[in-house]
Amino acid sequence: MKEHLSDQPAQERHIGIGELARESGCKPETVRYYEQIGLLPSAPRNEGNQRRYTTAAIRRLTFIRHARDFGFSVEAVRELLEMADHPAMPCQEVDTLAKRHLAEVEARLARLTAVRDELKRMINQCAGGSVGQCHIIDVLSDHRLCHQAGPHGGAEIIG
Amino acid sequence: MKEHLSDQPAQERHIGIGELARESGCKPETVRYYEQIGLLPSAPRNEGNQRRYTTAAIRRLTFIRHARDFGFSVEAVRELLEMADHPAMPCQEVDTLAKRHLAEVEARLARLTAVRDELKRMINQCAGGSVGQCHIIDVLSDHRLCHQAGPHGGAEIIG
DNA sequence: GTAATACCTGTAGTCACTAGAGGTTCAAGT
DNA sequence: ACTTGAACCTCTAGTGACTACAGGTATTAC
Image (cartoon, rainbow over all chains, first blue to last red; front, side, top):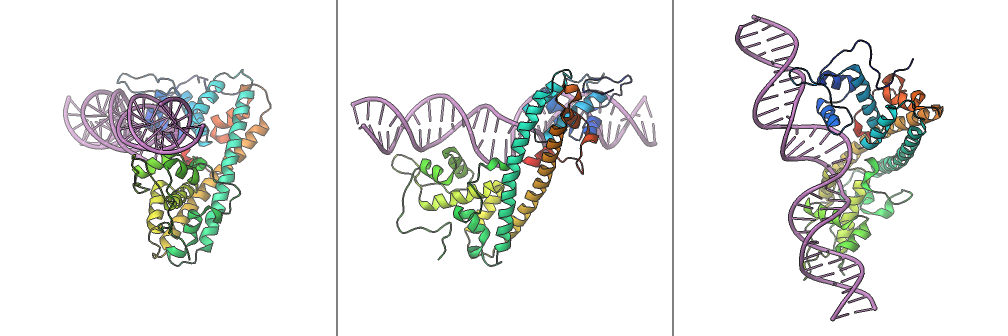
């Protein structure tokens, strides 16, 4: 049998926000933030108004964190969660989302690789003299000296 | 002879912010923003209070844009500009900055490559059934199914 | 002269958090 | 039972690097 993000185990272990954060690899602040923006449901509170979580929350948050690590935007994660919450749904949409994301990742890879090559080339050519003859400064000043195929895109190559 | 970012050509052509932006590949808003945060000096104004630029500004802004495209932070760009403004300075610092940056770029590349491979693998394994049996959702839910070497870092792989 | 475009300032919004202030609650040790 | 310290709470503001908008002025083309 397969477990889904919404499955509830027979015996629920209740944990605080700190342990949830540790288990899923993010900070308590981020957990509260995710609750605030609706990625996580409002957690039930104990007597003293502190959030209590079950292992279901760990799974959901791990999912979120994993997807964010993969570079999915929060909005994409929201869509993925919506799908994950409906396991009977055909997974074509998930697939489409992942494919679109793959395309973005590959584009970034291409640009980042070009940047790396250029940086390497710049560093190798640096004779170690004064800034006036430094190729790094040259390349950054003059577009013609840049060995890249096309023009650089926005500053968001990496973001 | 070599031109530096601060060289003044004999015959200065004065242009408006729009043309400067076009020439250097950014938006007028961004130019004003750079002036505001001190990356660009306050531009002289014409009768009607509009900024007028010389070709020196195009070079400086191109430098900034290029460096940003290379993934340097604005603060790093500020340092680079400081160095470029002092051509007699030994370029060791520039070199160090570029090398540090190269290391960061390579780290990002490694992570992004891993992400791409994982995405590809996920997409290939998707049988096209329902979300309940979709491997993409699996990989994002369960860290054990992820074929990456180590744990994923922060969400800032790509930023 | 008039209309379209480019420019100005200042403020607020974006994304995805992160940090801090100022207070309450919990768990452990004595 | 008491105390200490860590963990938790809410709310607000800050980050980076812009981007967008409102409401106005200047320039340019016809």
